[in-house]
Amino acid sequence: MLVAAAVLWLWPSNEFLLLPDKARPVAPLVSVRGGKDPTGPGQVYFDAIIIRRAKLFEKIFPWIHRDATLVSEDVVNPPGVNDTQRLKEDLREMSRSQDIAAAVALKHLGYKVVLRPTGARVKQVLPGSPAAKAGLEPTDVIVAVDGRPVRTTADLRKLISRHKPGETVRLSVRAPKGLEELRARTVGDGKRPVIGVLVDQDSQVKLPFPVKIDAGSIGGPSAGLAFALDIVEELGHDITRGNKVAATGEINADGSVGEIGGVKQKIFGARHAGVDAFLVPVGDNARDARKYQGGVRVIPVESFQQALRALATLPDKR
Image (cartoon, rainbow, N blue to C red; front, side, top):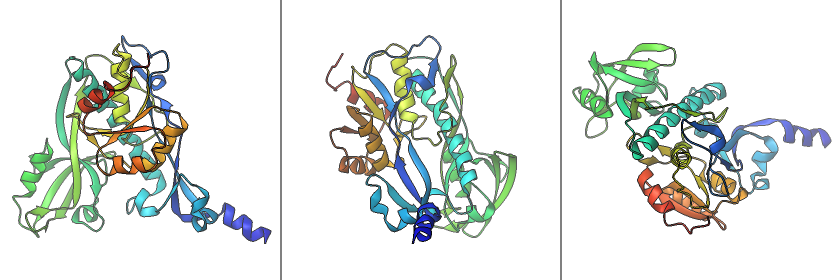
């Protein structure tokens, strides 16, 4: 009996647990030339989640973790991606989100920021798609199709649409190991030829002065909104008004805020930190957060500008 219990408790399953991590202030991670960390209770907090393989016991009795979610491996690791590869991709996502967050924040404050489009960045590769068979992976950047440059996502759509379903496209891809050339056969989705990827804009960021963000081993793009808000705060704009404000959401170069995963765990992390308000992307993220909000005020936002306007309506606790 004891041996069986030990096996259940120690042996990993083929599924994963998403667990909350207490929300923490962003300011200690951010260094802005000419800026300073905010003092007093009002600060911006970021939320992370803990992802680990579930033990057999946790898989059989998932209710022992009230604030956790049990998910299959393909939800955490895309097909063909192992734990190590996923962690590397998450760190690349984090690095990119930091650059974009700094650009959005400084541009809002009136500084000259250069955002030069440099390709279509792969966010997701659909399982079994031509792109998957060709070897495309998340965070790869498509820089040319059939030898013609791709600088924007519109360029990619336009060049692929020149083909008929069943024809092969030649893709020039900037990957972590260097420039690659891949070939993918297009398929029809009822309206136009596609290769089975979801993409967003990749950009080269040039800032007027250094902004350094050290998130350590934390990966993923979901802290982008929190980073951007904290940069504004550190440059002398008291946007939190004395409130403890947690924020989550992927921030894009145009200031829009994209959906993220693990919202259930993040609202629990915000509650554990005792925050007053939690900014989350509109839609499913906001609906999920409200299911578990407790005493935290959940504020749905779809852009950086909207987030700033929402913060201006919070009660002044200074």
